[in-house]
Image (cartoon, rainbow, N blue to C red):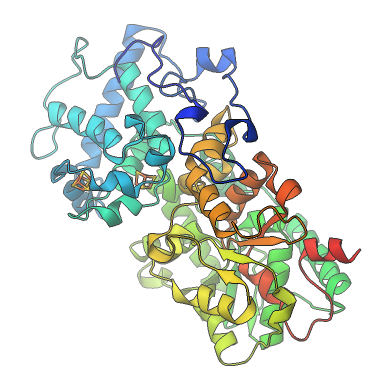
Length: 532
Ligand code: SF4
Ligand code: SF4
């Protein structure tokens, strides 16, 4: 890791990667990899594995700047191991840091490592070991710094840290490895801790997550930068769209004081997939729920990217969202189709939203299953009579144990539903987790589309093996999470799989609306296209 900058530790090569099933089982059937641009190689670090995801990770110009860079990292590391500055995370961090038996059971649990053809760099404990080695050398057993940086240290220099920073963004933070570890150690937590040191201590983080994401959200209220008038315009557009598609006039409730439910969506849905908030509105109105959206920008966007790299930012955004719910006087917040928002709002913020900030938060999934189970929503499954598979967002299943509702709903509404292998708590990440879905900066998208999503693409192709080459039959990937949906959209585009093999994707609520007995036209765009 400390090798000079002109040494690239690994070079991407499709021939080394895990084989994909037919019809993508040859290298010729996959898009060729691109060389990184010269400018990226010079100013950004591609000398880990040929990819770069962090724009502001630039080489110090002088030895003094390098010293300052390394010592800031060491100081951040000391804060990670202090109860005063890392309360809440220190116990699980110490457990995962101290007790690794190097048994490598976790390696097979990770989708990136086997997908890469067992490249050592992507082993779950590789980055943990680099971090551990530095910490063991510079901190005492109580986590206190014991010395200043030794310039001649063979294990620590700018190159080591630059590679480590990038390596922290080769992990999807999906925690599948933690589930496999016989000791329950969590390498994702260590990866996140490394990201946190670089962000909180050194201001180094990928632009899509920090500058365009969290900072934008703190400044404007929304990660998309959408203002309140623009939001209200989008709502109007969605209402018109609902009427056009279904013949129903639905007024989406906004800022309704004292409603039972405040529904919060990932703001990306309003921009990229407005059919999703529309589908929620159709289902909630049909079931007669007492609900509202908020036009307060912090209250309409459930995004909280801080979860992936910066606890401080995460808490600020989470608290703002709860404040909105308090002011509206709702009984509960329901989080829509966004996995990381579920975890940020319902798990992480459990530590931050106590006392006057407390508002009950629930997932949309048990709520919808309840509406299906009790017959408040009625379906004609023949409307969804095409192959459907389910992608399990890691945050629902592994982090929160929400496994049954989504598949119980699918069993009712989709007669050709088939599971991926493996699924449920053993699912594989879509490859967009941990922020990757929105990292289209530098040449990072190629890493995501070829490597971190590879296992998911394999699972999708396997699930539809019986009909994949029959282009007459649409094959639907149900991805009930905004980020996962983005990652899956990008894989399908990257491999041309929608155009070539009629692979389609969208969320759960769109499929539910398509199957509603009370509607007389299809709701899914690709079925409408077929009708035309
Ligand atoms: S958290 Fe997920 S991506 Fe990261 S090392 Fe573990 S299994 Fe691999
Ligand atoms: S499975 Fe657990 S103990 Fe074994 S190498 Fe992985 S993290 Fe360490």
